[in-house]
Structures are given as C-alpha cells and as structure tokens.
Length: 169
Image (cartoon, rainbow, N blue to C red; front, side, top):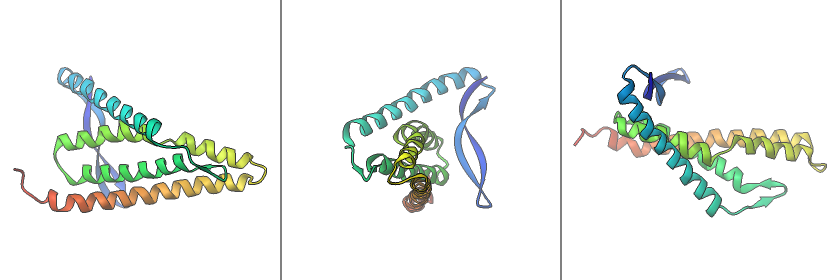
C-alpha cells in the first residue's frame, strides 16, 4: 500500500478541524508516484529552511539566552498557524498538499524543540539562574509559540476570507 496526502479530522476546542497529512490508500501505483514527488517537495522545503537559518540568521545571545533561535521558533509557529488556516479555508487539493509539505519540510527544519530543551537545561545549570530560569524559559517559549500560532491562524483566516468565498475561475 502506498502513501498519499489525505484528510484527517481532529477535535480542537470542541470543533472539528480538517488537516492534511500522510495516509494510506489502496491505489499503490498512483500513490507511490505522488508520494515520491511529495517527499521531494518536503525535502526541498527543508533545504530552504536550512539555508535561511544557517546563512541569514545571525547569532544573538542576551543573558545566556539564544534570542535568534528563540525567535525562529516563535516565527515558525506563526508560519505554521498561517499554513494551517489556509489549509482549512480552501478545498483545493493542490493548496492543501502545499500547506502539508510546507509544514512537514520547512517548519520542521526552521523550528527546534530540541533547542528549547537545550536552552532550558543550560539556564537551569547556570549558577546565577538555576532550575527556575530553565522552567520559566520552557513555559515562556511554549506560551509564545502558542500565541504566535494563534496569531498566524488569525492572519491566515483574514487573508483567506475574501478569497475562499469566490467561485473557482
């Protein structure tokens, strides 16, 4: 059985949401070609994210906190919110696959949960800060990520609202 992009319904805040993700299908021949192309697109998004972060983001550290990587995580959550909102707003399969590949490739490379854990451990091990700083960093990073995702979702819905109601051309 091949893998293709499909739909899955999730419960979020008491309402159902449609999300694109990889799933199984019976038509293996068609799906294997689609899957191969999708993997290439996901890898291309990942390469782009690596180029953006490695080549154009300076290292900026304040008080032992890597502000650059922290802001990348928050910005990535915003981009993910926009992509999810666009995915939900439009029924176009090509756009939904684009959003899913963007999330799987670009966002997964652009952001780093491992960095959050590493940064919090460094802060917790710091003699001047201690465990409270490490825990506060995790809470602040996760809170900022959730807020950025919500803001990105709102921005995506504002962008999609006048476009999603138009009949297809």
